[in-house]
Image 1 (tube, rainbow, N blue to C red):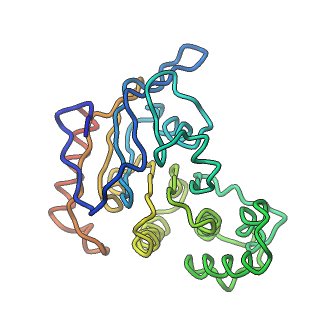
Image 2 (cartoon, helix red, strand yellow):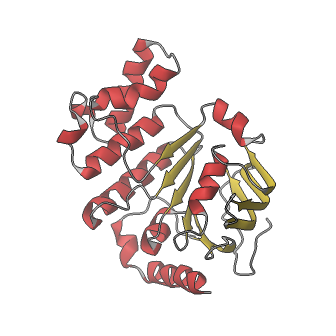
Length: 267
């Protein structure tokens, strides 16, 4: 694996064989001359849970946009599932969860969640079954007929996650999904997300956060990025087996890893 810094550790052994996402010399310069990314090299394996941390404007969200085909690299190579981002997106195997829940306010929880399947022309019976499945997965099976305005912030985020999961994606991109939540709700959703990911270890999760504690608790590896132009300064493995519980946050190993990621951010 080629990286940008000697701080990068060897990747964790996850029993996987192929790169799901591969970036080689990836750079992005916007028309106004802003260099968002410069010479990013990263190989992401199937089943990983990678957290991206770095200062605002370091290009984390730009990487996500390029993976989904919403932005094109200025130079370098980007493969997703062994093909181009545009082709990968056509396969409906990529799902995106934003910091804002982006729910339709006039639609019920059920209608919001089933929308991706409805747009793809999936039959009504499958829509109903899959909606029930994912709402049960996120603990909202009793809220199917409720409107978003009747939900708390944490519940709205659960709906967004359910909508992303309904297509059974191979790759789940999450751009600061818990950033606007209070700490108690945030930690609860962190645990729920890990439980969901562990139930489908073929799903790969890429997660953007500004919270070092969150990155260490969730991930198999933390990718640390530099200020603009964004580069990868370190990839730090989190060699703690799953399942993880709240007790991990109080261990010396957790504190050591938080310090290591924080030091890489300051490097």
